[in-house]
Image (tube, rainbow, N blue to C red):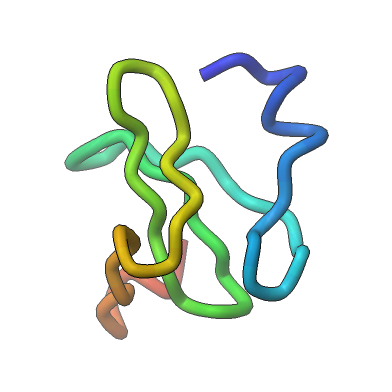
Amino acid sequence: MNHKLLKIIACPICHGQLLFYTKNQKELICISDKIAYPIKDGIPVLIKNRARILSLSETDI
């Protein structure tokens, strides 16, 4: 994930900061909305219906 890109993109729901997370899979995480957006072939998929809801244990990132 390009760190310059990470500084300028935002969550499409709340417009907050996204965090890059790589533990199990590459995702962009919005802590505020408790949602994870996938990264496919190096491209963030910032579409709400393609995101997954974070579990309670994942919100302690």
